[in-house]
Image (cartoon, rainbow, N blue to C red; front, side, top):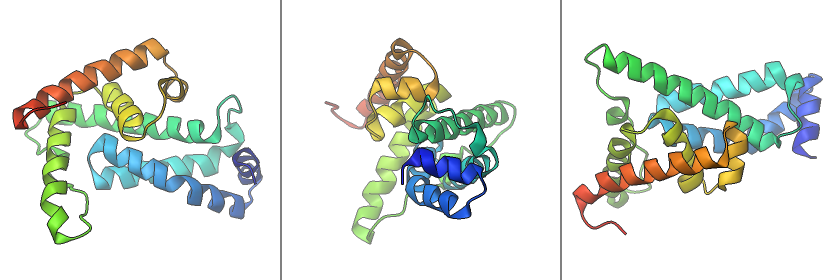
Length: 183
């Protein structure tokens, strides 16, 4: 069954269609949210919000977008909003940054140190990015999406995607250079 069919069926209240959409898209949404937010709890909340909104508003699906783009647009919108709120909270209080308490799980004890160090470096480097720069970097560099697709998902021009990506890359490269040579 096509994704568009599943959304229409979910809009008609068919729980099986919605379940199939969650099976197909929860991994993408949770992975993107986690990479954008650098926070496991936040990524779980964003994922829940996306699929709750999908269930409640499936009838509002914009068929000019692929289902993947539509779902990614929702996820990115929630992530950007959350990042903006967190920045305000951090600006007005003495608050521990979220990424310091949320590290990906290692597959074995030997990988744990490398994953934690890499994660810490990524989170420190991405911390100075605007929410939009972080989203663009994650979608293009970590998820491997094309700039044109990111442009559609975020509703911004390809030129703005390239600009955000360029600034994000420069910022992250600058942070990574503190740890040695960067190619």
